[in-house]
Image (cartoon, rainbow, N blue to C red; front, side, top):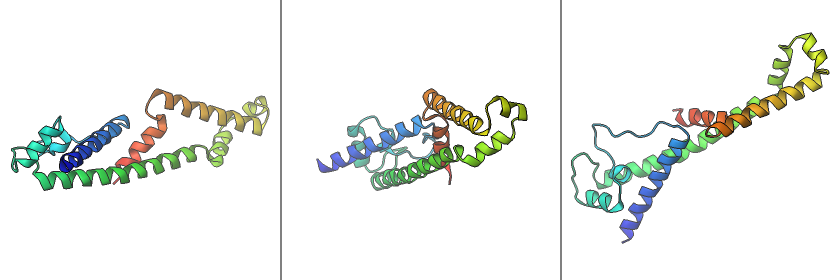
Length: 157
């Protein structure tokens, strides 16, 4: 009973991991020609436990291997998720760097600066524009630009 409960918990965590990776558009594990983990790909806990208990099942990892693979994947996902959050946050903060606003302001013409009411007003307009772009992007897909930054940082080796 306890073994089955542990295996069910592993399967739930692996499914949640796959769901999170899908939401973030991170590359998913694909069933290939090599042995697959029954904890990841079999539909029910009963199927997974039966396959693992059978010892050798064609196309599947054996018990110890399947469990070790699941734990390793979950630990790696945890580490990559934190790295992804950290990287996405860093890039988001960089988008609001005052130096970036200064550079963007320098690229506008003198006439634009005068018409906009001066440097402070123009910087404020740039800030509002940047905020609107990020907010719109976040509404249209998983965390918008931040989601893409998360995915990039998650997938870094």
